[in-house]
Structures are given as structure tokens and as C-alpha cells.
Image 1 (cartoon, one colour):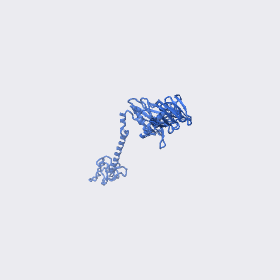
Image 2 (cartoon, rainbow, N blue to C red; image 1 turned 120 degrees about the horizontal axis):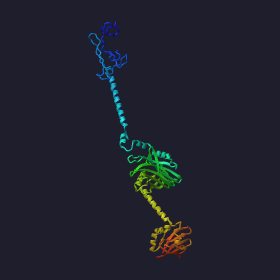
Image 3 (cartoon, one colour; image 1 turned 90 degrees about the vertical axis):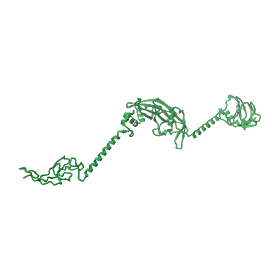
Image 4 (cartoon, rainbow, N blue to C red; image 1 turned 180 degrees about the vertical axis):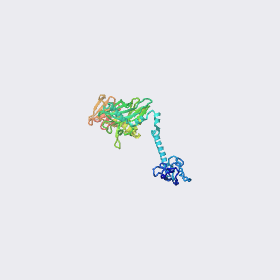
Length: 469
């Protein structure tokens, strides 16, 4: 008896009768189990036997229908063991192409990111371009942006034991070197201090990079007697980054800075000063432009230096500093109307000082009484204007005659001027400045003074200040 499933007899080899295989089943390519054609996985071994996402004519398993002659088992032509990727409804095929599209999109995104990472400088310049064409390397550019020059300046002064004067690092500017000319990286820096309450100073240093360190050199020391120095943005009232800063003047690296330079006490109405500075690193030259004027308090409560530059601004360096001064809001720049009013006030004060100067007493009398004297020359009398002085207006050694008139003294000078002195008020005044040759007591009372001139005799009444012929 042949075992179940045998195709030939064990004893004689005669083919066994085989029932036809139904058309809707076929053997599993992995284990041979007969499974329905609609199955995706073999129920016996779990192998995936169908994938609808492959092409219909590629790598498929061809199952021939059962033979109808001789009752033989249908011939099975086995191709590659990869199951068919083509399904009946097409659902798996849709999943495959969706996954394929997602994969392609992901690859495109990754490639785009890699290209983006190859660019620098705002997306306009690539790293290889900088390395190939620029004299300043990318590393140096980054270092210049990241390093704080004031911090480097302070730490290097400390490292070289240059802090003994108790000066405070107050300003520093970084200058990138030039590989073509051999100029190294440099820092220009300023320290500010005070020897005592009435003397301040600043020191200007230049630091040059030597490998990974900096070598400082003191270039300039300036002293300011009776003044304080402040370089902070709050005192200067400048925008951040305005002062100090690097500049190029005539092709030279230069440091631009400013400082409030006030008298000790900073009193409103005193003399204030804001100093603009320019240090030429290549020429080792320091230029200072002082804005000097009265310290005034404005409506906002803050004080300002109301002034104009003390030095000439004709040179390129000083003109540059004058242009930079507008960035310092501690300086108040007057309008044209204010400048005109200031000039008029200055002239008025000068004239007042001239008139009050005892040395000018006779000159002032002649100016003020010119009209009155012209009228008297035509005949008659003249009422004179008398200005009194607390201090002597003549020198006794220059007089040739003195007359005592009771309450007054009269003096005739060698140059023809007549002066008076009031014994009661202790005041000095001019009696006559027209060219007297002599004086004497008059005949018209105690207040009458007789004045002799080349043109004749005049009488001056000390009580009424009247001159008559």
C-alpha cells in the first residue's frame, strides 16, 4: 500500500492515480503547501507569496493549470522563487509607489541641505571662495567678530603687569592684519586714571599679536590738571558702537574716540569740554579737537557743553574729527540765531568792560560828551555826562596841578585832562578831557572850577556838572 501523497507505487513503480489540482490553488514556493491563489502569506510557513507592487512580467512564479490527459498531475514550471508582485486589486502597488516618492523627496531635501551648508557670508560667498581669493582667512574673520577687544586689552595689560597705575581700560579697537603688507593684527587701547583729585591722565597703547598672545607698547600719555575724564557712552551720549571705532585716514589705520573732559565738580555754568581724539597707528600721531564752552542745563535736566572747537579744523584729521563730533550728543551745537545772539552778547560785555576800565575813563567821557561839547563850542553851556569809578582813574605822578574845592578835589594832568574826586562818596570822575593847560578855583562859589584852555577859559560847576565859557 502506497503512503498518502505518493505519486508512484513503492513495489512496482506504477504511477498512482492523482486527483486533479483545483485551478484556484497552487503550491507554496517555500514549503509546497497547497494554498489559495488569493493568499498573500502561506498559512503553513508564513512566507509572503504575493506582492502586487512588482511588474507583472518580472520575477513571477508561473503556475500551469492541471493536465487533463492521462490523469497526470499538472506540470509545474518553477521560475525564480520570488513571489509575484502583482496583486488583484492593486492596493499594495499604491503603497509601494507612495513610499518610493517619499524616499526620493527625502533624498532631494538632504542634497539641498548639503549644498546650503557649503555657503557662507549671508549665502553670497562660499567658504572655498574665501579660502581661495581673500587675503583675510575665515578663521581670522570669525575671531575678529567674536573677540571683545576691550576684554583682550584688559587681560593682556594684566598679563604684562601694566596695571600698577590704577588706570581703568576704557576703550579698545581691533584692527585686522594684512597678509599682503605683513601688517599683524593690532589693538589700540586707552586706559584712564587719576593721580589725585585734581589731575587725571590717559595712556594710549598699541598691542600687536605674537602667535596666540599680544605684545603691548605704551605710545602716549596725556595729563589733565583740574579735570575729570569719562569715556563712557552714557556720559558722551553716543549710540552703541559709535565711540570708539576703527577708521582709515589717508590709508592709515586710526582709532577714533571721544571723552568728556570736565572741571572737577562739574558745575553748571563752569567751563566744560568734550575732546574728540584720533590716533594714527601707522604714523604714531595723536590728534585732539576740544569743544570748549559753558556747561548748560537744558529742559530735560541734563547738562551739555555749549561750545565750539578751540583748534583749527583745516587739516584732514581735524576736519574728520569735526564731522565725527556730531555723533556726541553731550556737545550742544548752537543754531545760527543763537550764534548771532552769542556774538552780540560778547561784544556788549567787551564794551561794558572797556567802559568800566579806569584806564579808559577819559576816552569814555569824550565819547559820551562829544555832542554836548560841539554844542558848547557854538556858544553857551553844556551839561556833561559823568561816570564815576571806585578806583583811581589817573596817576598822581602824571598830574601838574591840584585844587581843593571843599567837598571835591580837582587834578590837571600833564596831557591836558582834568579829573575830580568826591570826598564824600570816595568816587573818581572826569571833569574835562578836551585839552586843558591849567586849573584854578573859580570866582563863582565853592563848586566853581576854572579851566584854562588854548581857546579860552571855561567854568565847570561841580554841583550841576555844567560847562560854560
